[in-house]
Amino acid sequence: MSVSPARHQPSAAVVYHPFKTDLTALRAAITEHERQAGWAPTQWYETEAEDAGVAAAKSAIEHGASVVLASGGDGTIRAVSEALRGSGVPLAIIPQGTGNLLARNLGIPLNRIADAVRAAFYGRNRAIDVGILTITREDESESDHLFLVLAGMGLDARTISATRATLKQRLGWLAYVDAGVRTMLRDGPLQILYSIDNSEVKPLSVYTVMIGNCGLMPGGVLLIPDAKLDDGKLDVVALRPLGAFSWLRIWNKIGWENGVLRKSKAGRKIIDLVNDTRSVNYLQATRYALAVPRPEPVQLDGDDFGLALAVSGVVDPGALVVRVLPEWNAQS
Image (tube, rainbow, N blue to C red):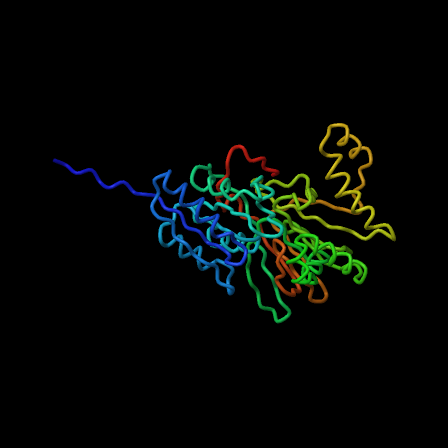
């Protein structure tokens, strides 16, 4: 009598930030779904401060994880994604941070751990793009990093660099507003050299340049209205100084036009009539390069990555697989 081969039993792995994760609730939800789905026991990995979860995620892949759940803030999600990029192993996001930027754009509920866990066991796979940023330091050293939502140089990176840790812990995303106001009042425009898709290098005066993979920010602010996570392109945004009322123009463009008018047909007609593209410029690209005369802070997905003289990079289309539920209202 022939013996049928043993059926492979799928298993999950969890990479979690110990100070941001509600471990009791997460363990309870995973135990329930693991049993219902008939999966093998889940493996648990705590992030290390040195790499924010990259090594833990690589270990999960090596031990055959069918899906990796990343629990923590944007830094943890970014680090785990760096390890999962190109592996085909799906990522399930358990948002536990301040901004939860990728989770917002995917429509993942921010305060319902059980729903996020359910996606890991029963959700569908969605391939999304990732951005790659090469940072060139003052000593000419280079390092490559992945970003999922937004990388930037200028006011946004200065703001994140200036955000006080104690204020961020107490106020969350509002801490960036405090730092942004202080930075805006203190600093002037940034002079950059830029090239998009290997075009001729051009100079530009900006408050900040951001490279986006998706467009929704906390507070419902739609920074990049046309950005999509799976279009094979990155969206370059330049906020430009145009006199004493520059910031009023910029806020009107991002807060009023993108956040309010674009949500209705009549509002979109108003935008077409006004067509003010002087203060906020949008470009799409698959490759980009920026350089500055003096070292400037760089941020990736809301984390400070130190000072750089230049940054460059590309989009890696469909390089990350994420688990989502069909009822989630994705923004991009």
